[in-house]
Length: 262
Image 1 (cartoon, rainbow, N blue to C red):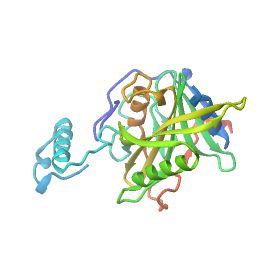
Image 2: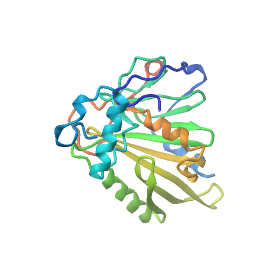
Image 3: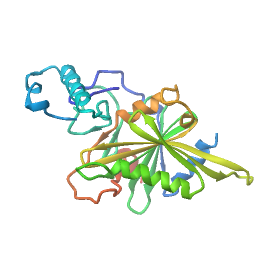
């Protein structure tokens, strides 16, 4: 993890942005999935304790201890983060600013942006590495939470209606959906679209990440999975104050260089 909640990012060597692949694709960008898939409580209990802690590490430890006492787990303790929870611009890390979402890539990671050609708004971003990918979309969510649970149920129902299967399992961000959908190959052969879906809820926003390709077939701590877990943890969301319906897609914007090319 590059940074934690309300602490400065560690100083690391800048990423060579020239080596990154930033691909802008249109409304039918979802076609790449088949290619990949064929193979916190802020106050201490009773209002005591936290005001006396100055060290960020001690504060996070105290929050974890409080969560254990209440039986609740803060799945976002290590990210993804809201923009109000972290300090950006205090390090030498190269990030890609998509307006409502900030991505921290690594050298050699490819990014495909699914763009609505009429509005030039980014609807989703897919990080591609080796034979795997992570498709990320951002949605508005109610302040009371609970949208992730509803979406998990929807994914399971939709998979079953499509003749596939979907099950819930423990994942790095709480319950994840492991989905298998039937798919016809180019020669009419029977193939299967395999994916794992993560959800993370923040202050009035929800991130959905769909893991594709070889990484979707591995365990949570498999070598191909770990980099995508880290990428998801280091996402930063700028929700904004615009009133939105829960479940409504929050669009992103093209990076300045890419926008200028259009």
